[in-house]
Image (tube, rainbow over all chains, first blue to last red; front, top):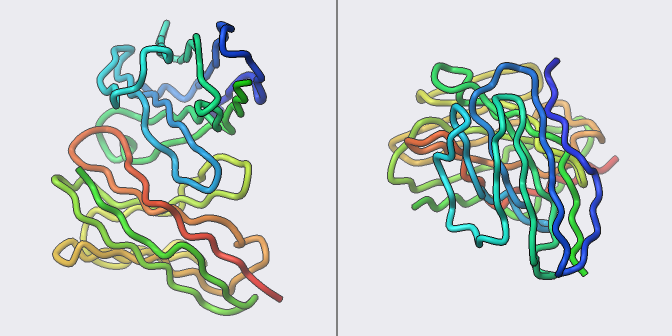
Amino acid sequence: DTEVTQTPKHLVMGMTNKKSLKCEQHMGHRAMYWYKQKAKKPPELMFVYSYEKLSINESVPSRFSPECPNSSLLNLHLHALQPEDSALYLCASSQVGGLGANVLTFGAGSRLTVL
Amino acid sequence: GQNIDQPTEMTATEGAIVQINCTYQTSGFNGLFWYQQHAGEAPTFLSYNVLDGLEEKGRFSSFLSRSKGYSYLLLKELQMKDSASYLCAVRDTGYALNFGKGTSLLVTP
């Protein structure tokens, strides 16, 4: 299995809703990432988990709450979002250390629309 | 911090060769990467340079000069399916990649 699977593919939510994005990989990767991508813009790093521990938080607002329950799963909990948070949210994974740490495998993304 | 620059758009003809340049300024350097991204899809890994020189992978080659903070991606024998955004990304001393704004390549018949 060489894939990163993200669900749901599309999500529409109101500003008062609570929802979650999910990401799963079975490649044995111990680093997992959340990126945010707006239309015609590059991916922007949000969070990095290494060995299930949060190692990077790029000053992301607290309405985004990441969680890494085990080495295969990564969640992004969403609460009280704003319309400007509408974007494609990409999950990625990689090995930690060695040459494999250099290659991120991305999921297809979850397209979020906040009304 | 990091500053990564690449052209916004390029157009080339099917069967031709195109070179996409990328310049960067980083506080640390642990490799330069090129990703391809079709509209509405995830980025896919193309190539990686950590030492100076040329890396060739089929129709795609990537070059790095660390002293000049410069890289390019060379695409040969262009095909229509190569129309996509090409993202230059730099890894500093951490795990994560920081991406440039991407170059939108249009291949015409």
